[in-house]
Length: 161
Image (cartoon, rainbow, N blue to C red; front, side, top):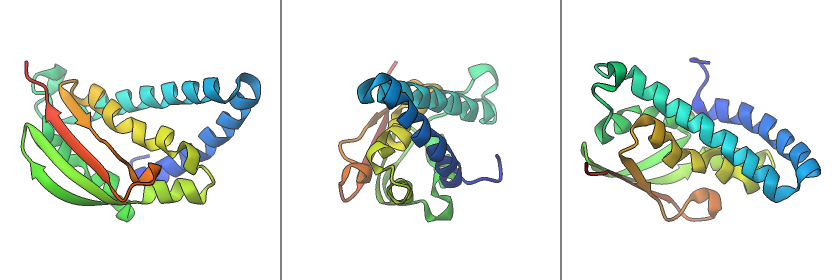
């Protein structure tokens, strides 16, 4: 999967998740089906965060956990294929602030007829990724393009010990 962009990976996952959700909804109802889908995606996000953290040079066995500068350095992976346009506001080891002004993830889910679950498929991963990457990283976001806003406001901070 290393050669597949995250946008393409999400597109592949969305095809499966959309069909799985329809099947679960027929059996369990919409609310329960969406809760199960959200739980599975949160688990994937935690695992991905842990994998990225383990790949950080010098972080063998959690000896040097990633900070917000490290998080900023990997954001280009989510931007491939012009998937995200980022307006950077602040970058430091303890604070990372930016706005997303274009989200092709949202556009893709809408094109696939999955716009109503785009937040489950992508947005809820953002804060959850951090729990696997470094649990001290906290995300505050008040709006998303996926939910109809003009931009997504990402505000990350590092929790104090």
